[in-house]
Length: 128
Image (cartoon, rainbow, N blue to C red):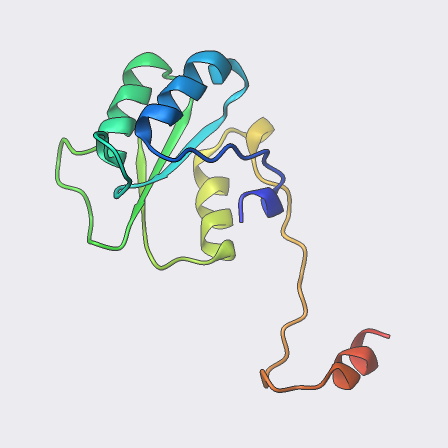
């Protein structure tokens, strides 16, 4: 999803691995996008607070399907996105929060037939 918006993505298994990566690569990191729930001793809220304290230039987006965070769960400058979400919702969210020089690339339109059982023949007719 983030790759489709032009970002190079590093995925971490847990919060500790994310912090270890950021300690080496914080200068080239624009965004932390994390779920609240993750394995290990650090959840997404704690990871967001750590990133806010150590790397204030990195934008922070936290996602969860369990409802909105309470006051103090995430830093004030962090934003929250409710799951489920799709590529368009994430793209619009990033366009709102990122500086102009870091905004995502425009999304490429993808063919999605109205009828999920539409044939390849129809797709060829529409797109050549």
